[in-house]
Length: 229
Image 1 (cartoon, rainbow, N blue to C red):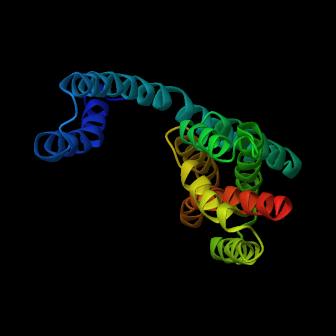
Image 2 (image 1 turned 60 degrees about the horizontal axis):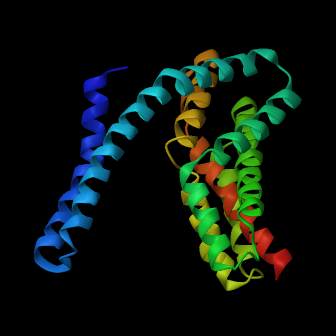
């Protein structure tokens, strides 16, 4: 864990958008300077918070994910792999800030018709089920392309029956799950699996977990739309 590299990574992420807003403030927007000062203070606070968060993720989630991934493969119990994949996928998705924001927005726009808790559960279950599917794929050497093609075939099939307003929410849900909590843990699980298997093919199979897991929430929200529709 390198503090200097983490700080540099955070600055490269935040400074570009800060510079754009600064230029817009001078040339076009001209918001009250009090509000702009609040924005600058918030940028500093966000930078410090994100730095501490990334340090925590790398010190805990990454190492734990690798250890758990290797331990699951050594156990040889498929039911345990599936149960763990669903449980951990559900847990990390509920903790994902982007998913929380999406759930709050959908709750507000729908006037409570789709509660934030319902959307959280549906999206988290989608990630969990497809994470478990990804773990099973890695164990049995199932080609990733088969699962992705099958998953997106289901997505387009359900999209034809779901109400239009659910279509945008479903793909936003898939993007919201690829955040700073979910992605590091899922990737580290793949690293743990490939470390035990050791072969070059196993290392290649450890990739694709995030892409596969992001299909789950899209399908889950579209299915919710079909039910509500």
